[in-house]
Length: 232
Image (cartoon, rainbow, N blue to C red; front, top):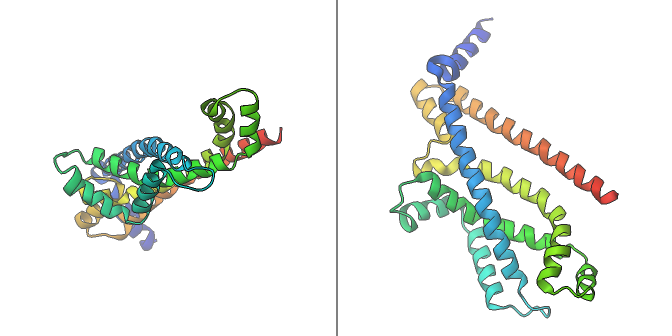
């Protein structure tokens, strides 16, 4: 009984007293803002980079665009995201004092490298016979890609994109480096205020877990629906 009362006192102090739950809610809002903006930017950049990489000739000889795409992907995937965030904050966008904007751009650029590979793999997974069928119908290369290849590739691309969004939500835990009060930083600040590391950190972890679990369930439902549509 005493143990339960002690646990409840810690929970009350960390989340209920002085409406501290609002602070966590605001932190979650910052986390989701950055993740959503970054996801949208990452899809735009990643799609563009994917088509640049696909511009390589059929004989494997790279083009200027495919070389640029490969360099971009190598640099982004080969460096830690926290360093990319710090470089953007202190060097590239040092005149911008909007932390959410800087973080969103950074994670969007970072995500773009991974989205590019997702989109490229999804397009390449479509049977080449589909492209040949489109061309035989009199469609040009752009029309074939738009009306035949991309609709089929979309089913291959969508589930991995959902996973990428989930990864983005967790990666935003480092935005405290640019003075953003996201969920992780809020919980860390609360440990200093209350001299209790366990309750605020575990609480934040549970919030992350619930959000990720909900998204995972929704993603699973989407994948099952896509599989059913393939079977009909």
